[in-house]
Amino acid sequence: MPNSSRPFYRYEDLPYLSVELPEDVKSYRYSGDFEGEMTYIEGILSSGIHHANLLTDAMRRRLMLEHAIAAELVHDYQVTAEDLLARFRETYPDMQMHHIDALIASGHADYILRAGVPYFQRAAYSNLMNQCGNLLRRIQEPDYVSPPPAKPGNDTIRQMRHAGSLSRWYHVRMSIKPAEVHEDEIGKPIRVHLPYPAPSLSQSDIKLLCSSHPVKIRKAEQTTAYIETVYQPDEEYWVEYSYIHTAPYHDLSSADAKRQAADHAADPLPEELVPYVMEQYPHIRFTPYMIALADEIAGKETNPLKLARRVYDWVTSHIRYSYMRSYFALENIPEFAVLHGRGDCGVQALTFITLCRILGIPAKWESGHGVHDRGHGTASIGSHDWAMFWIAPFGWLYCDPSYGGGAYRSGNKRNWNHYFGNLDPWRHVTCNDFQKQFNPPKAFPRIDPYDNQNGEIEFEDRGLTAWEIDDRQEVLETHAI
Image 1 (tube, rainbow, N blue to C red):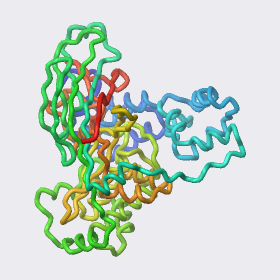
Image 2: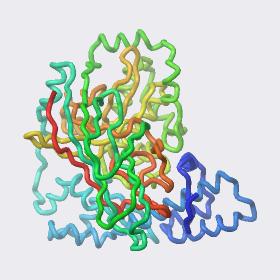
Image 3: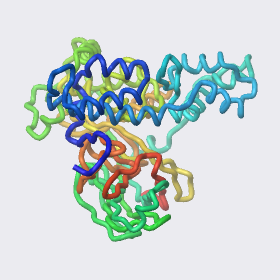
Image 4: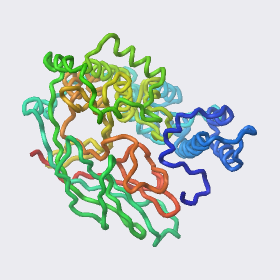
């Protein structure tokens, strides 16, 4: 274990997030006294005693995880309602505190209470600007009426239906560098883990084109381009590569598809799929509440394709899109989503996966980036997650609850149907499973222990946090093939 002055959890400790915390530790958390919680945990861990009882190994691991979560919450929740109001008044001068209350009521303002005072997540302003445009406009124009939902065309989906599949070639650059370092770290060894295209059903012809430093590409569920070198000030670490992404089209709404699924419903599950109908702690967890919800969604349906569609319909119609706090700060992501009715693309994907597995439908994670066409062979790129599910005799199929939910709320039924069973060729896959270790593994805890879309950096004695890193993802060129 690397030297550290603070409690240090190991990657394999993540399942212990499901261990219940003692009441005295929870009292610090529920009051928002995260600094006090960290100090209290440090005292327990240093003495090895809790209420005159020796700590179990499971509780020690859980407390180390809780210490790391508390440290993250302290840093990530520092925006007061007054700070938020001042920021909004730069655009909406007439905004008042009761408007902030209305935004909180919308469910998109992520906050925690500290000594009874709400503190908002650092991204709260951008989240609310993105998600609450109509509400904010009515602050300036009280009589403003939202326009009816648009039903835009989608050439990509029409082309997929006509051609049976679409493929695109991409040239991508991933770069990362430390934003903040200690002066004594100059000239010290540094380890860089950059996202790299993962072989998948939809991704092929992956080629490393060039890099800033010698790089190693090793197979893993979360493939990385690994650089190990000596740190020099302002040095950037990058890789460029190309790949082909192919999106097949499946018409799962047809009577024939439903009949085929029914005919194979009793087929034995292939052995290699068994892990994908099981729990994966701490998040893909069959809790009593999630089991009850799955049973309610399923009703008396037994056709696996129709069951999966019922899950998709429930998630896309009940979970509103909202930016999220760090996944590491959530103990059970799917249960958070169904209890609060909100979540980003990964939260929605994990909710779909968990409910499918409870119903005996193999399901798994895939993620990386969504690519957005800007025309003339250029595109932007942003982090995105989705899901896969397996139905005989079709095999693995795709599902994007986030894009599907957006289509559902805009009244675009065609696109809503499309993203059950299909994606599109505007994708960049870096992870084809959830909560998987790098190869080589990081010596220090991951910034995101579940996913990898931006990259991570560490020195010999510490790992850099998200706010100590500058990263950039660029699509340099793309074209249809």
